[in-house]
Image (cartoon, rainbow, N blue to C red; front, side, top):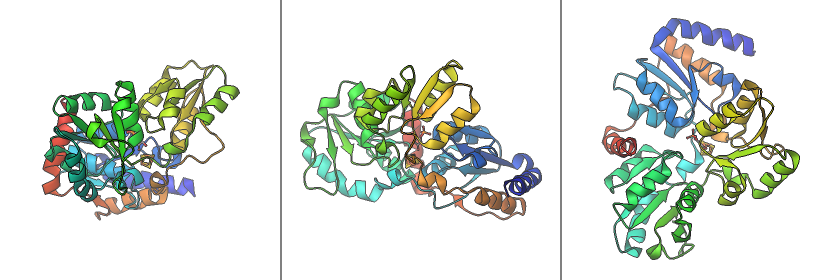
Length: 342
Ligand code: 13P
Ligand code: SF4
């Protein structure tokens, strides 16, 4: 039962004391975030891991997040994932080997220097690839600064893996007309890569891509006075129809800033919408409430696995360690440092 699980987690945590830090991403289910020391977006959680002295960091989230936490923590700290099956499908759409194989096709088609920029939602070896080719990492909050940084150093930005975040960023910067999609599997791209300022790798989030502009129109009919806020991984037409766009941290701030009698319609993974509605007086409504907008990668982290990993740590046994290869780590850290210097 949940009660028994809660007692077992509490007992394991008492044995471990300050040696363990439990982090819960905004998209984790209630039974997980209730046991977390910190709840937040992927970057905020890595910062909490880095700021803590805890020897064991249990990251309730997906692989690329645990890798980033490993890069940002000290050598004495170890990062664990309750389930090694929790892998973000979007990060898997731009594997470093595949990008490396396609790189020549992109650089051959363009005249000046080409700078790769990868979203935080990518594996460490792709972050390393970007640093080694003169590029950097960005989050959804600083993608525009990263594009500007790259366009000051080259003629073309290649953005990976999320085409929607890339297109939304290019649109906001007035570069929408100069962006083309690049499908590594297709003979042809959506436009002339050689003329583009921004080349968009053909990846997407399988959760956010399901929202449509019709969902926004329906939400406005149902809640005429509501503010509609969506994640920038949504399609450009959804972002254009919304009032605000931002990362999970920005969405959280929008709800925190709303009055108790207001309604906020949120277009993102369903668990964050449910948490915000539970935590605040403001009425928080899911965009497209009848569809199941949940992330199957995040869902892999079952509360029983959290119990197991904590009990095993309390007994001195380590499982599911996420450790970035030292050869990859140095370059991946460079890509992250360039972002921090923006
Ligand atoms: P955040 O970076 O806002 O935490 O989002 C992560 C994510 O997986 C979005 O789909
Ligand atoms: Fe990946 Fe989308 Fe799930 Fe985020 S919500 S972890 S981007 S699949």
